[in-house]
Length: 348
Image (tube, rainbow, N blue to C red):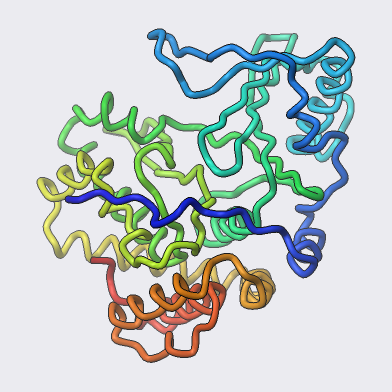
């Protein structure tokens, strides 16, 4: 299978007032003691290497003594907001162990390592530039997927919890030599993940943009693939960009599915996942309606990309509904309406 790259580097889109009101309504907007721009005041950095001595593309950053004191206190407060709804009692035994910065990616994130001094257990969260596309992606993930997402926004800053799992590229390198039973489960989960991305139009799910969560189970393991990058929510114009099956980086799992699953089985798993998503839409009807109404008035892509995607989806679904789409919010809404009406064509 041929791989491809986005047609142009995605530009960030600001969070407009209507989306801010939505975020406030659903407790995603909160005053923060530190902003993304504050994190940029580091004085020096060193490359962060993995256990094999390879460059991770992250840099560990260091600040002046006065900035360090202020930032570390503020970052532990933010962690408390994420995890304990701001309960300050936890701050007594938490501290910042390390701050890493990544120049790779649209949001140029800072990764904060928080350590519990009582038991040396650690956790992470991220400080990023706020981007409306990413916020829509996070919300759609929270509503439509089996995963709950915790994040906060304030002005131009986005705070995200760490999503635990094995990076997809590493998983394919180290974890595919499993029993046949587990291989079938891995392939099944990828089919479901592929369907989730296509229905809600989350793009660029190549191997390093998702993680695999493994849960030991009776006679084998359960697998769940979780997206960790939401920058490409409804931005690109090509339909295939929203289908992880078309990225060459995912070929090892694709070939696993071809080897272990018949087309009828694949279709069954697609139908199962679409049914689950339709049920989630019905359960969160008010929230998703609120989100999509705002998305339909927002600009998160270019007119030519909107036109291209609407046309390609119209051909795929053999539906004239996409002819009225004027922005990406319209396109997402129409795709979800087809899902609920059971007129959704399987990914292919």
